[in-house]
Length: 110
Image (tube, rainbow, N blue to C red):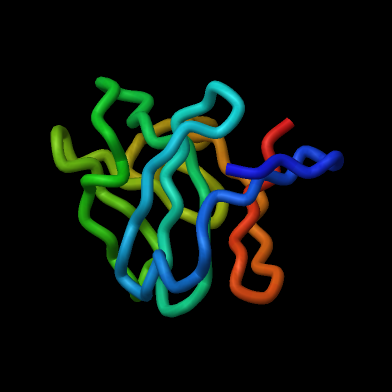
């Protein structure tokens, strides 16, 4: 991984993350999952806030842009990090801006 001065970290090349694929990695001591949903990239904390399951191993709903944790079926919106299956409206996982420059994928982690 390559870090730039503005907190953006190169995490992979776009060819390594085709539509429907997920990549998990450590970025600045954070465990992050990057999802390619119909050629749009999303980065979210890779740990389910319920029981710590890796969200990168969950089921991706392309139409809703959500990931379902494969341990206890908690559902997270990939664009906002909101846990849409939780009855409270204030349960979120961390999300990170993703930028593609040429063939390189960067995630911004502060």
